Length: 316
Image 1 (cartoon, rainbow, N blue to C red):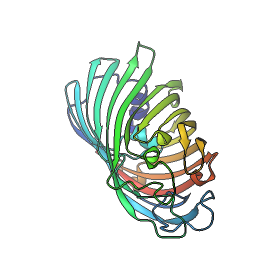
Image 2: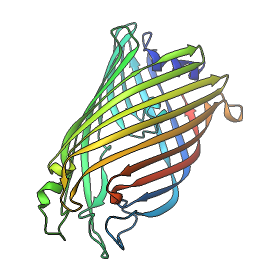
Image 3: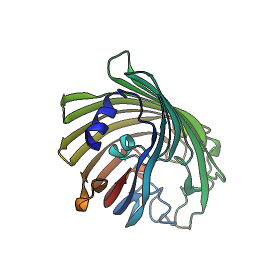
Image 4: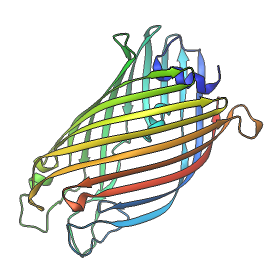
């Protein structure tokens, strides 16, 4: 069984005792991306009307990613970014533990320390003056259960929190700023089912719900999502296509824009990998393209992003 066939099986059920010892993959990718958003920290000054589309920014991106796993009997510890997440366009560092409960059932516990870390604006609503950055940080804790009720279902549960070092949202307006606080906590649940159409084709539909209880009621929301991932293996070639839709409803009126925020959007990720690159069995060539768009009833929050990249992977 090649590594792609093993990956296809792993997306269905765990299936067998882990082979003892270390295994994993290390990749390096170079890409180009473009983003349009009022919340991006690439543009410090919002000009013109507040409730208008953001400025576009583009640039190159590069860096390593991968995952290291250590197997011992029916148990595994892992660190890095999972291939299952990357296929869906999600890049998040993860540290965790997995255990086979039976030949067909597994449970994993993991911690994601960097999923919310970064920079945001202290007050994103400032117009015609430079905005100042602040740190946002958070943690996420995840439980994944494989093959629930022997039906091939995968249940992914996560709890997360986030906080801002300096929160001044709405400071230039005569509004209740407590409604705009962006720190808080929430949970996410996703249920998916791997459906093999043949030994080399897999469909994986999923449904998800996320609830975020922000410290400011106008920033709290519920988000529904649906997605479909398709994978196809042809010899040493792996193709995957992921597409998803979402809708988010916020719980209180945003006092700056005087309406409740409602977002809807979609995303798509196309990935390709060739195993045996340059004649090396453990070397792979990667290509990735992704696009996402979010449309809001408040134009200020409209966003779209795209990224294309190529790289190499080493399997061990």
